[in-house]
Amino acid sequence: MLAVRELTVRYDAGRRARVRTAVDSVTFELAAGESLGLVGESGSGKSSLVRALLRLVPASGVALFEGRDLLRLRGTDLRATREHLQIIFQDPLAALDPRMRIAEIVAEPLREFRPQLPASERRALARSMLERVGLDATHLDRYPHEFSGGQAQRIGIARALVLRPRLLLCDEPVASLDVSITAQIVNLLHDLKREFGLSLLFIAHDLATVRQVCERVMVLYRGRLMEIAPREQLYSAARHPYTRALLAAVPTPDPAHAGPAALAVGEPGTAPTEPGGCAFRHRCPLSAARCSTEIPQLRAAGSGLVACHFADS
Image (cartoon, rainbow, N blue to C red; front, side, top):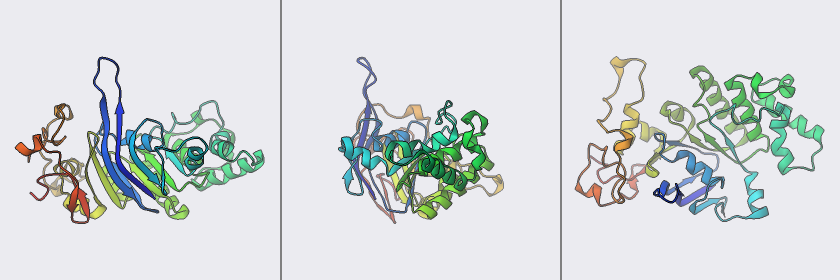
């Protein structure tokens, strides 16, 4: 469904500041009906990648959605394609217009993409989708401030799905929710994916949540793709030192049964600013001389791909 090649996003910080590369030549594929997780620390380029696919920020490379390059579509072609890609945002309340009633919010995509529908039909579709995500039809005429964070996220999901898109981009949709609500939203997304035949690109910094939702997982560090692998392979036998560090840092409810200690990596701010070499080399316990001069290329590792000179160490 989605084939991304050498996707790059750069931000110009001004005349005196250096251009910052947020996404650096990232290549991956997403199959129809698949859930692909995207993980990494804050600032790793996860949200920039999603916004590039939606054409919210400029980008270079290729991003084929069902054979059409999202980065080169214009005008009516771009608008027609956007109907099939929808996004769920991280902050559910901030993503809802406080001046609009819930019926208007959920029906807004219908007004934009299917203006021929009468208002009564748009409202009926909004009500049906709101009920499908677990909210009552009596909520239609309320305002966003009357809802909790979890309820607001359900409204955001209803708005994203009312057009029945084929690809749903989830930009840390549970990051601002507490644990019990997170579990409810994750279960809801799992059910909706199966019911509507959705493909998901699911961003999160919580690896436990990604493991519940996704069949494959992609790991970014400072805009570069470090590793991509099937879920079970990545969680049981990660090949990249950065992936291992992320997994080792996941809290365990019983310290007596915890796995190996986290790798002794440095702080994110100690990553190199000079070009060339591996982006993770200043934090990596396996770093060697070649890591400063050679950018590791993605290569096969089991059923996945890894960008590390010493992936088998």
